[in-house]
Amino acid sequence: MSRLIEDYALIGDGRTAALIGRDGSIDWFCAPRFDSAACFAALVGDPSNGRWLIGPAEAPKSVRRAYRSSTMTLETTFTCADGTVTLVDCMVLGGDQPRIVRCVRGDRGRVAMRLEYIVRFDYGSIVPWLRKTDEGLLAVAGPDALLLAGDIETHADGLRHTAEFPVTRGERVVFELTYFRSYELWPPARASSRSVAQTERRWRAWAKTCKYDGPQRELVVRSLITLSALTYAPTGGILAAPTTSLPEQLGGVRNWDYRFCWLRDATFTLYALLAAGFVQAARDWRGWLLRAVAGAPGDLQIVYGLLGTRRMSEIELPWLSGFEDSRPVRIGNDARGQFQLDVYGEVIDLLFASHHFGIENDVDEWSLSKAVLATVEQRWREPDRGLWEVRGPAQHFTHSKVMAWVAFDRAVRAVESLGFDGPIERWRSVRDEIHADICAKAFDAGRGTFVQAYGSAELDAATLLIPIVGFLPPDDPRVRGTVAAIERELVHDGLVFRYTQGPGGTDDGLPPGEGAFLACSFWLVDNYVLAGRRAEAEAAFERLCALCNDVGLLAEEYDPRTRRAMGNFPQAFSHVGLINSGFNLSTHAAKPAEQRSAGTKPTKATKATKATKATKATKRSGG
Image 1 (spheres, rainbow, N blue to C red):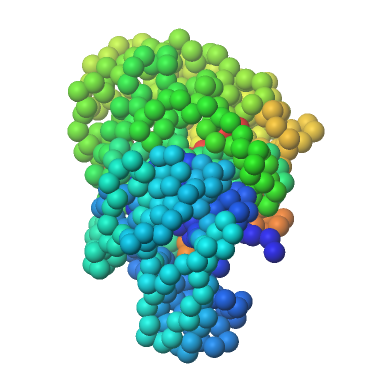
Image 2: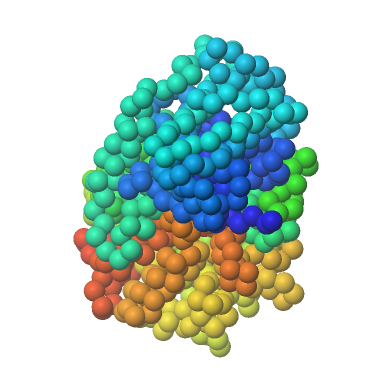
């Protein structure tokens, strides 16, 4: 039986996360951090690569899942022939080691349950030593150790441990799994009996500060909680997704590791968090960015590790068969070494925007900004790999040039409205030069649309960002023509593809094949809002929200042909897109939005519009 990406749900503790299938199997768990090696890797292999299953012994009649309100505690209810049981899964907040608590609760009748526990450290490649202790079942290999404690004893069965047990109405059977370093003191086998309740109170207290009151509020709040769950709490870094190598096409090779922090995502995430009222989370995220990019601007990378580390060499894991035989499975990401011009604009935009939301100035921030601007002034005429991180030829990508314009536009505004020092006349001149260059070389007058790159005939969904970042107003005929061209050529079943692949399409250095990119689809919603096309915006937003799975999570992509989620999951910036499109719909009445066109100063209204920019969630072809 084939698996579906959307059949998974997420639990997390602010340091790492686990993915749980509808069958009650934890098929992905990296410890102690999101980017650590997995000890359950069945998600990108098979059960022999590690999993922890708790579920009915016989196939259930139905399965229903939901998160407890405003928490990351997952409830999976199995209705069986002889009764009903609920599996409650939670990762405990606040501990020094990752700890998963799983409770089987009898709701009706008597249900036979089974447990299968297969530990394989280092992405399914290492079979650990296992031995029973007074504290529980201990698994050790190299630096890694797991301690499984439970109300039911497990038994060795080859290279796995199993258990079978009945659960009757009113009965509770609890298991706890704790990761720790094998050379450190053992943690307590059981957490406090209050730990799950305390964890849920912390989640609810965090969610309670949400200021959103618009369409699909429950999904918007769930998206914000998901962003929080994907934040590495010690540093504030937000990773793109907790998984690696979930395919963009079944059987394809576009399988990338997304357990890192992309700079271009920083601005968009910042606006999503600030619009919702999560100022401290936004402050932490900005702090991570400033530490990560410290140093010479010429050495700026597009992506960093959760700690701000710079090395993440890409390698393949040939012993893993991949999700539904989609090979290769990769860890690390070689896109880190690409020159992507747009990232410089993202950094300047984030630093400029943070001040308009009351985040204090960092002592070295403006010096960094001026150094980044000097680099952009030197390099904006160079071809780059673009926000899609193509592994084909470098080009003069339109979006990259637009973001170079953004860098100087925000610098000019920082001097004008925030009182910072700088050569404003020179920056204005460079800004105007870039603007004129783009309009002359990236606009196809015969077709009435901006194209993907200078001299290209291809369309690119990234050009939907032109009015969102304020390069041109939404009622400009060139913007309207670009939206119309994308609607004709890149929209299928109401969803937006990045660009045309295959013969005659974009050469991104890879075989063609992927789903529609959900963030691009939210950008189209935002364009409709900005253009006053209210009914179309609402319909498109509802259609996208319907692609969330049963617990409100979105993947990176969706394949309208197979009607399946594709790509890494859950994708943080698909959720950023949902959040900000929701805010735009709730902020702007049924009329064109005030837009941040060149030279205007931000107002409260334009700051709300600027939150739309967080939807630029950045698909990564080649990482």
